Length: 79
Image (tube, rainbow, N blue to C red; front, top):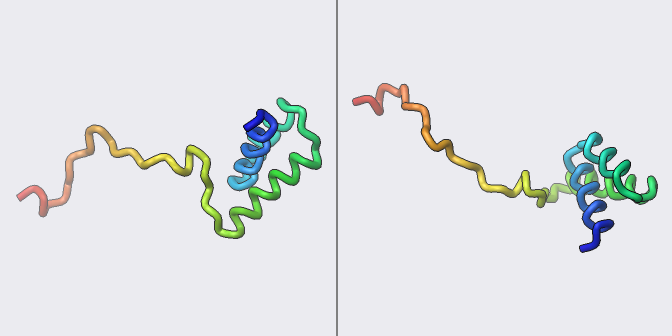
């Protein structure tokens, strides 16, 4: 993918998460027209409303287990 395609994909992800701060950062750091940037943001918003899953790294990474879980305070496990 080209840099432009990557930026538009990240703008769609920002729209999906309603993350205007990231969207504005991407818009100001890259040479993307306001119309195209707004369309990408709206496309992400529409994807969320349509029930599509987000495919960004933050949403797809596996949940991690704590390395040292806290000891159980449940009386049944103490016996």
